[in-house]
Length: 334
Ligand code: GYE
Image 1 (cartoon, helix red, strand yellow):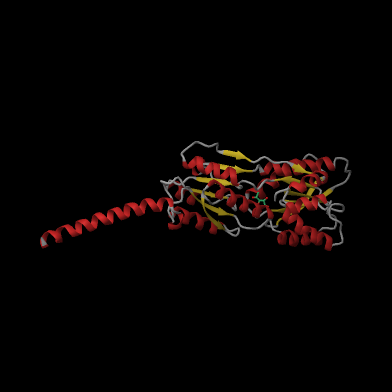
Image 2 (cartoon, protein in one colour; image 1 turned 180 degrees about the vertical axis):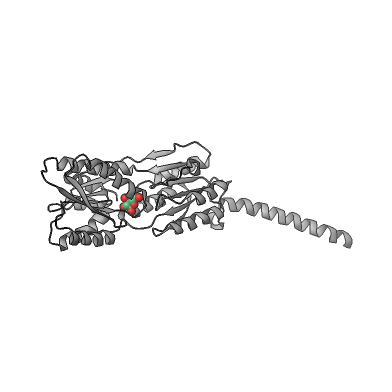
């Protein structure tokens, strides 16, 4: 008997250990607290999301939209704020891969330099969804889809409005441009679209163009420099509302009247921007919607289920003049 016991005990211990591992393993798949992901048995999807930062009103609204939509869709969200640093985003994505989340979604702070980490996600069989901003990777198989705005179009709409406004201008119209963070898709593309549109009138000239990093502080500081260096500034094109709002302070401090002495065009149409437009301090805004959460969660469910999704999903947007901003403001959600 004694002999039997010594023989069976290790066997039984191994069997118990195996079943513990099995149960533990299955449980870990559906439980993000343990860092689990992979194939869930309870249908709960875990999403790892790497956000750009908290640089603007747009970004805050985007983060809220994603968090609310994840909760509403029953998706377990792991969220990381990269503080506008690519290295932080790469680190967050690698963590999500290690934790075996079901889906990775992110808004790339800049366009270039993602191939290696995206390849790592692909090799780990974790689908990636790009949201808001895109990457310039030649290998489109590295991500499932890109959900976001057409930034070139936003720049073009801003430029076309200006061309129309200045069609009777006989002399040069001096434009200064506040760009988003260097290398970001919305900075590159809005610059491109705007530049192409204003080429229709050779009187329209960009005399200075610098990054203000999409922040109010950046917009204020760079606008101060523009005002110091240039006597005659007729137009400001800011790649987002926040930089335009920061620039207002610099323009006021220089004793000029925003919206009158200097025509101000921005992008986004967040509440503060829309208020400035309604007040006549801004003159035109090309809208960019941050409310991407619900569509993102739908896409996550689809790619997780192995369904095909379109490679590009474009956000619908409009433009606003002062009159239109006054009308839209009371119902503006963000
Ligand atoms: O316009 C700006 C934000 O990527 C579309 O990023 C987004 C841009 C948005 O900081 O306000």
